[in-house]
Length: 431
Image 1 (tube, helix red, strand yellow):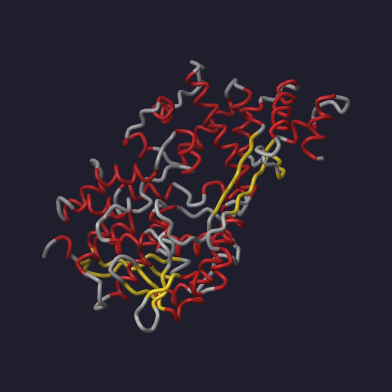
Image 2 (cartoon, one colour):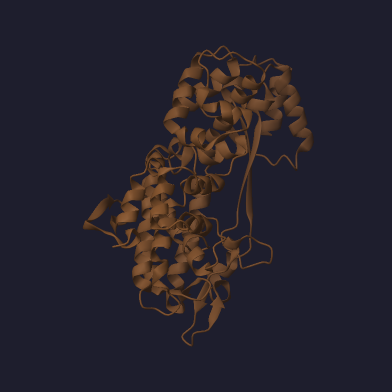
């Protein structure tokens, strides 16, 4: 029997709090799960710094990746013997679902911003490079790793396959919304996934939804909207992200100024130099970063030491609503006042914004995820979701942006009450 068709003697299951069980029968999937690169995802949290806000949010990218695989496994089961579904694509789709987040680093998005990295590019490198994952995929065929990478990168020729992994209603979103809601303890992310899976239909270039399932999709869209603003963009979580980002900026700046660390930051050197290798990247996880943050508590540099202490002990920055684009003069004055009282505004006065577009119809030139959700009418014709749903039409194409200004209120409070600068800072911040 060919390796691609090989089954385990007995089905393996992972107990899962969201899907109850994750079922594995394919030898290829079981072998991929066992690779070092996939096991590394156990050491990377799915929600980064959200556990500073929601203490239960300790789940990992490993959990999520298994969940996406399980949803796709169920979709494939529902698509069997349906028109437009090619069963020879089954294993490719399952592997892409399992491996879609393989390239995420520790505190993924903060690291990407500071060091100019792209987790999707590292996913591709892990799949195509000299790795355990690549060795398993090559046993299927020499071209198989490239096909898996193309599905994840949304360049694969069969757009139906791509849409199941990455679209406005895909397995990735359906897992993380439910999983993140479960572990944060909120009620926003719950929707009737079983109903959605039952009414999904394969078409030539994308998955569509039977019109009878429209209300379940409305619920999904609203769940996504609520999760982004109540969980993913929570201002306390963003405060922790701001501090984390500034720790990395400070460590990099010190390294580039030939500062002598008490403990050489070996795992960060190639990141600081801007030439990170695949091997260096794979060795990075959140256990490693936590080790260095602990070590940096002993450093001579006051800013690095203070920022690490804040992050590790959850002494976060205060925040106010503040759009720097509308208050340019105030921002310039605040920065000057902070400097005058010995507070470095580069690290202690940070504006941050979050934006989201919960649903949009396709617009030429937009990325693939903007392909609309189509409803399949009883006569077989398609109609774009917002044309049928008043609820979705109300939020379709509407981008919401939120601006915050973060600063260390404890340091400001410690300034002398008769300080002219302190009084003026308070006037600007709390007027």
